Image 1 (cartoon, rainbow, N blue to C red):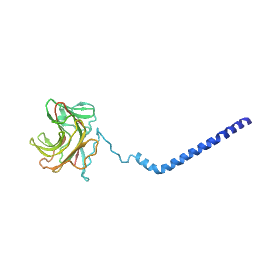
Image 2: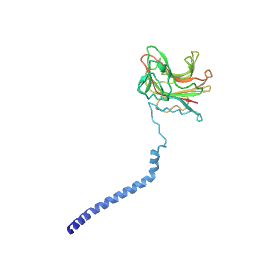
Image 3: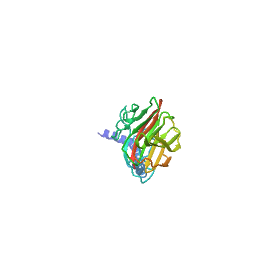
Image 4: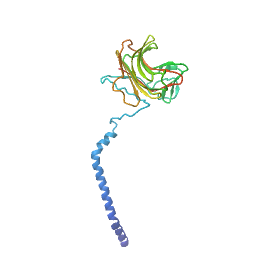
Length: 266
C-alpha cells in the first residue's frame, strides 16, 4: 500500500501542471463565449425566431403567389387560385382551391397538367385557348406566372370581365409589346400598349386589374422585383363585370406553361 501511494503521488505531481494549464484555458474560453453572447444572442434569437422578417428570394415555380396592392388601403379577398401541384393528367381539372377550370381548360385536348404546371400544347392551327377560374366579379385582379416557347404570332395573355368569348378585356404579350384590349361583340379595340421585349421560354409574372372604370397591367421576369408603378393604366367603362382567366394564342411548334394563378376580389 505505501508503494501504491507513492506511485499515485508521483503521477499527480507529473500531471498536475498539465491539468492546471488546460483548466485555465477552458475557463478562459467559457468567459469569452459568455461575453460574446451578451452582444450577439439577441441577433441570433431574432434570426431563429419564426416571427423574424423573411427575405424573399427568386422563385421560379411559384406555388404561393401573393398580391401586393399598389393602393395601400385596398382590401382584397382571394376568390380563385391554382398552384398546379397535382399529378399529370389530361385537361386542367380541379384547381388547388377546389374549383374547376372552365372553357377550353375543361375539355380541350391540348390542355394538360405536366410536371406541376398547367400546359397548353400547340395545335395544328393557330387558335386562342381560354381557361377560366372563379366567379363573376366586378372589381378584381389576377396575378400569374407563365412562359411561352416561342412568340410571334403566338401570344401569352389573360382576360378580365369575361362574359363570353365575344366580350371581355384582354391582356396580351406578343414578345415585343404588352397590350390591353377591349373585345366587345367580337370586335377587338386596343386600349393601351407598352414596349416589353420578352424572351422565349422565360418565365414572367403578370398582374392585371379592373377596378371601377380603371384598368391596370404590368409584367416582369419572375423572381425579380416588380415594377414600382403600373406599366399600363387606362379608363374604359364598356364592360362592368365577368370572370377571369388565361387567354393564349398558340400555333404549331410552341407551348405555354403556367406555374401559378390567383384572382382576388377588390
